[in-house]
Image (cartoon, rainbow, N blue to C red):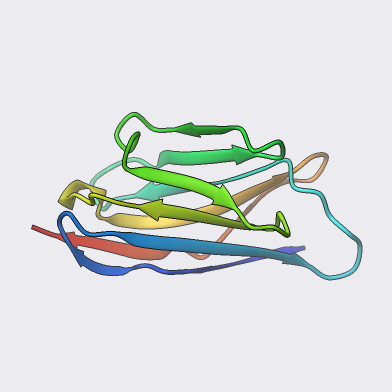
Length: 118
């Protein structure tokens, strides 16, 4: 079982910045993460893939966040960050971290609320 612990959400004014963090851990055997990323879900919208980073540090972003958000991994490769700049009210959502382990599947974090006030 892989555990994901997220942090960094909160309330910020439009134009501000937040940095989300997600640390993955697994008791027992060593694990290798194929890719990690973030989804978000607002109250009235479907879940949206925000950003993804692969094991070789390839990245991809939703069009709605390109140029404003940056995804990166920590040195230990089991932590993923989402730097969010120039935040807009429409970025308000619960942000979920996820990881994918080859041959095992996806694991999800508990979600962290991001609220952007206008």
